[in-house]
Length: 352
Image (spheres, rainbow, N blue to C red):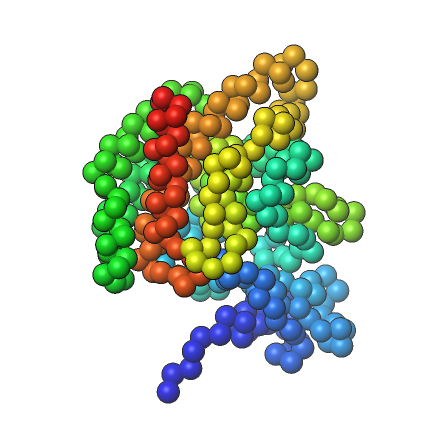
């Protein structure tokens, strides 16, 4: 009889094989703890026991994070590109360091940190830290193609969504609510709207929700933020990160039961929170003159609003694709309906 796959057991095995300085350890020398069973990846902390730390090399970590890539993401994520992005940001100190790779996952430095929740992103002090760190990420010269990838990605995800085969009759019935020809027309219209902003093209994280932001508890770095999970990262209009982050702040994923989220458009960040975010972002880019900051912020808020439409469209299409590999914990089709519904509601409300 075939045995079921254990993420925790495999995490320990991969860490023992690949982490430099752990060559003298065996399975009994480490403990494992599931950190997250998220929508895309499964994360496991592997830690060397106190009794076995004498076996570990002087420069070797005593704990690592093992990331198993999620089922059903192969069409959505370019793993080669993501690996280059993650290694780059780890090498310049803007994300956890890359410690090893294996088929279906990788090993990262483990940070003693708090993973943010959506409500944290409304705090003005936290928002300022996120804005400053995002400016550093946007300024990075990442070794991937620098062309704006968002238009092609929107059309690609529409194509994947249009041809997705649902796993059962009920899911097929729910998926029929999505008018795919209309969505194709909307994607084309949305790209024209985004282009009209004339926003800079920078490296963008593309998935800057609270769950991908850590607030450190490391000695000497308490309170700092850093970003993780760059798997959707690419060069694109910078405003996508603004709009996506603010749109995601209106979604609570810390809820019990199906579908696993609540989207409340009234929880879009306040002007006070956005001002703190953009003031810190501008300061990191060298813009500190009060008059210049005051003049820039309304335009940045507008850029974020328009780009939030792209966030709703992109992740709505993503959810249709993911629904082909359903989850008991998360309602992908319900998520698609919520995000796409918000897209149409906001375009009508704003008259764009």
